[in-house]
Length: 78
Image 1 (cartoon, one colour):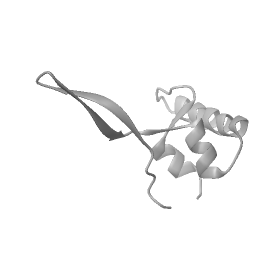
Image 2: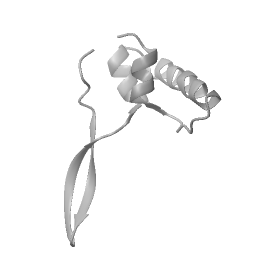
Image 3: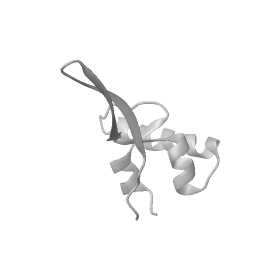
Image 4: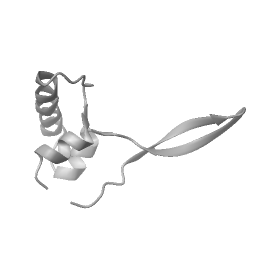
């Protein structure tokens, strides 16, 4: 699977100087899942909800509408 280039710009402060820094985020959003799998938004949310339910049952904390990149890659064969 090709490495994903999904990133997010976040503010970074260093000694009073504010900069924008590009950081690799550790999760996929529904929009990311749509693009990766070529599916609609409702199906993307369904998949995220299903994966998050699996993670919750293992004791992990999850965020609605986002799924761990690592777990997504393990469970989805691309």
